[in-house]
Image 1: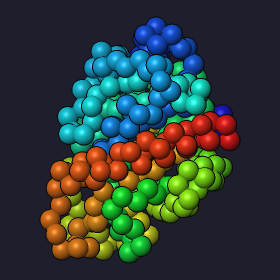
Image 2: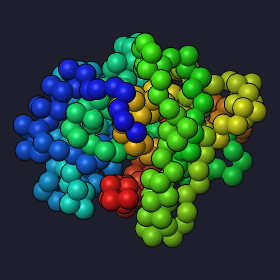
Image 3: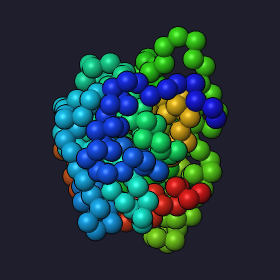
Length: 277
């Protein structure tokens, strides 16, 4: 898809700073890590290839306020491929506008990436999903009431989540783990409050399998920038009303920490596969 958007000036400046720090002026894949996914950065890179900078020191990035987002940007090689890993997502509920939320996608495009891999922590809505499952996203429901687009920019989202990349990622995970990941539809809610049981019943009726508070604005921006998108949710809790138990953010982070080794292995298999697909 020909890009309808171009990287912003702050994104170009951030990309130039990352290139200077890392000595790499091109990154094949950019990875945005969601709540609970940040610990994978340490084990993701080929030994001796990581260069990490504070996101707050780069133009356009802001210090994350949500616990579980370390606020770092790492340039590294994964199986020899240059990868940019952002562990400092900004959410709509932080009140900083859509530009801050989609800034990593613009930086990815400025660094020449062809692919954006997005991860998140999500509540599971489907009966066959369990805490710890990794689910590849096939589509989304944007229930945030927000878009990162402004003006007459008509971005096609028919295949927002690349079927080609999902197939490559699924095959890589089968080879690495012996099991094929589930796929599902992600519902993006504005947050920061968790959903009510009635809202969860509504989301199930609408066809959602997962619910969270991120990802969708980045997908829209990435497609406008001409990037292919692969996205994955880690099921960190069962959504409100499913178990009758209360929800809290500590549960989300604990699930991510418990599965960090498995997530690292999964991403080390997936990133080269989608880059070479």
